[in-house]
Image (tube, rainbow, N blue to C red; front, side):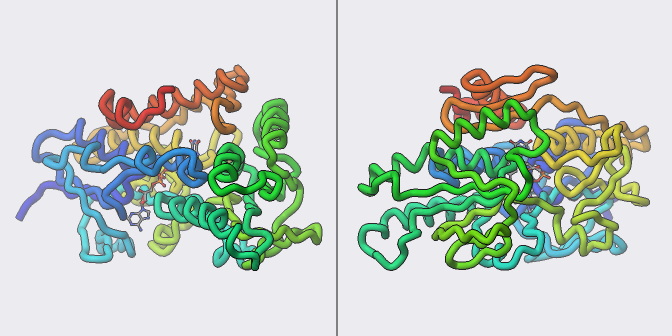
Length: 397
Ligand code: FAD
């Protein structure tokens, strides 16, 4: 019987892929068996999904086969869906089998949170995965294609985006760029298309620099985005959304970007969670478990002021690096390393050639911020795939 420890990583998103790559680098030959489980055989760039969703970039540029990112002689890739985590048995139940583990890394990512708003789960699209954004793009194009031949829905060309956080704003910005092109392609008057962005908070991008938020809103309003701020959605139906103000926005397309929560599989595993996220220790370990690490959107960590870090790709990647070090330390009986988040800045794209950013104490807007966004994307491609991936997937111009 093999005495080699078994490491199982669940999820090949930002956190999982970084953990796998760093383990592959740090572990010696035959020091551990590493298995990476992911629902798809590709890794996708969640932070880029708003573009294929709106149709301003291709699906192909938003994903990469996992086999191109890992060494399959060192890591076993299992394409399957995790159904259940059985901590006491040290087993993970997949759609088509079972895996045993000595060390487990949970990086399954978050799920959309609909805050119990009736109808959202059934009638609204979500920007969540490659499959979900392909559907949004096709659905919107279909509405344009149908407009001239089917008079039954007058609101075919109306699009409601719920949530004006980062995903919502980035998506409406792409839509505002795409709609004129769709109008031209389908011979539709631009005035017939309405893009609504609805947000419960009194401002878009809550918590972000107010001057940059004003810049973003002004720019997007000029591009034709109709904001409804301080206005919660009360209900979503097949006809559109009903707002708390009493107004109904009729639309054939509703896309919900208004919230993210942890993963139900993690909740069901028996961890104590806050909206599906597990409060981990400074070494990224689950409470009371020295062999279970939880990172990315599944984890909950607090800053010095006691406020939770928002779930971002940035923190997930940094956690992946430290997580790999700590798994190796656990195997070798070494000292784990404390995770300290290094916030590098925040950038939100506002469509072609436009963005806003805060990097350190520097504010940026317009073209320079858009270059910063490109740099962030290219840096990520470089980290996970080196120059070849930058050249294949990067948007340099
Ligand atoms: P993910 O990257 O979500 O990866 C989870 C992986 O697990 C996926 O590959 C998924 O397919 C797989 N998986 C899930 N369930 C199962 C299962 N049951 N079985 C097998 N595999 C499974 N953050 C930023 O820092 N900057 C941004 O600009 C930004 N923009 C965003 C835009 C959008 C539209 C969204 C939705 C998020 C954005 N974020 C951004 C947040 C960021 O994407 C997440 O915080 C980040 O992806 C979390 O990484 P993760 O490794 O925890 O999970």
